[in-house]
Length: 427
Image 1: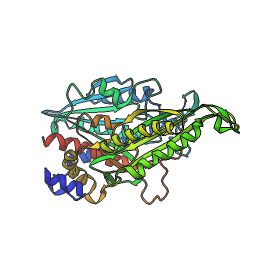
Image 2: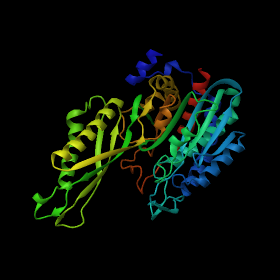
Image 3: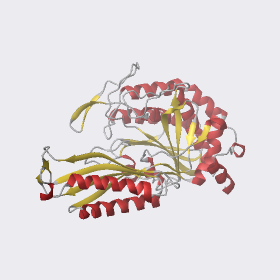
Image 4: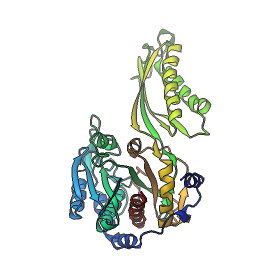
């Protein structure tokens, strides 16, 4: 195991240590490719926002029930969980797909383009699968169909976890992976490992990217409230300027990254995305508010950065005659691929996709609430190519022009099916 772990960390091929993909599973995946693509189109055309995925959940549940899979609904409000027991005893593996869409108005000419609208934070908006969750749902529905047809090959149990609200629940509501865990999704039967994937619009179809250890960032939302003393804009000496203090705090935050964080370990980011202060050009206001995000990939760096941000917020405000507080909200943990599990499953990906198509990549400062599952059980999360080969200008995720090539779905079904079989049958 240590040798496999070392090879994985070095990005070297370990395909020699794994058997060839199961031919029956691969053929079954190919036979339902058109069906998987059609599911994707239907889900894409009917997107639903976080904690409101009612029709999507009903479609998933009906499909799982038609396969003879035990189904639990209304998990974490709109989530669906399927339990498939193999014909042989063994461990329990969970497969996760997120099912929610985004408040984005779609802007393309796809025949299955979304026309849906909804009210989000009090405003009317379009709704779009602008991050590829529609493909994740279709891939896992296809995986469930294949594995249900081949229970005789399965040594153990498979949990199909269709998770709502990955993009975050509406304000004032619970949701997502955290609520699923709270409601016991990893229990009864207890999950031994969990796998997940994310389609990527900038990775060519046929490619898979992975990274052992921290692969996506912990995401913290922070709010700084600065208190000064209001005065006339022509007489700043008569008050305490919270805007000036805010500027010092922002500058101080960046010094934490540039001068105090060991970026040779992992990258880190502090971004202030919103500043609110004042009502008029010639009045120095009494208060200012900063809202932003912290992204970290190493637990020790995260602890250091949050501690120093707190110290700087309070210290700098006091230095310039005011006061300030900072509050943090944990949106996601570090998406941390268990090194041993990654090394164990890497040969499966290499054999399914071809070793030359499986790439060791650097971490990304995006966030994923799959990370909460990985805090409880070993997990492996990888990225699946969804870009048409030769495309030099792919549209980013979370944008109105975001697009995914349907040809990428088949490899996703094959990879998830074979990962499940190889993990359970190796125990």
